[in-house]
Image (cartoon, rainbow, N blue to C red; front, side, top):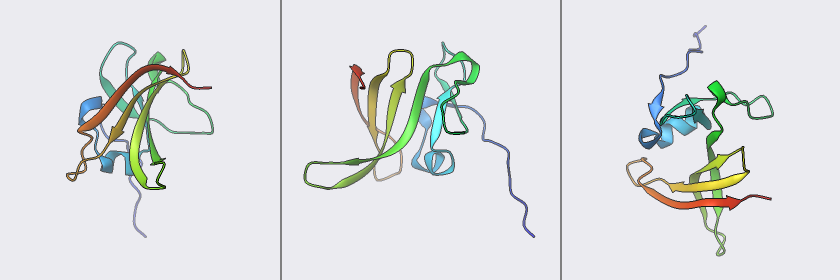
Length: 107
């Protein structure tokens, strides 16, 4: 029987997350409320902020008006229910394409 590695990867800078990181862990949260390091977060049916953080990077699929589906990531803030950033992967599976939409409240 093969063993399963239950160890989570080390913290990463939010700017260095890749598609593979989101395949392994679809939700990442800030490791500290005032930093740029993120860590994978378990999802038991609701979001629990690691170390008091309130920002989340969540893997998603965008559907465009022409019905094209694009993999991507959204960054949300739970304190004010705002959507801050949309990220789209490049051919190298990195998130070099992003759109800042800071403060758009999600209803």
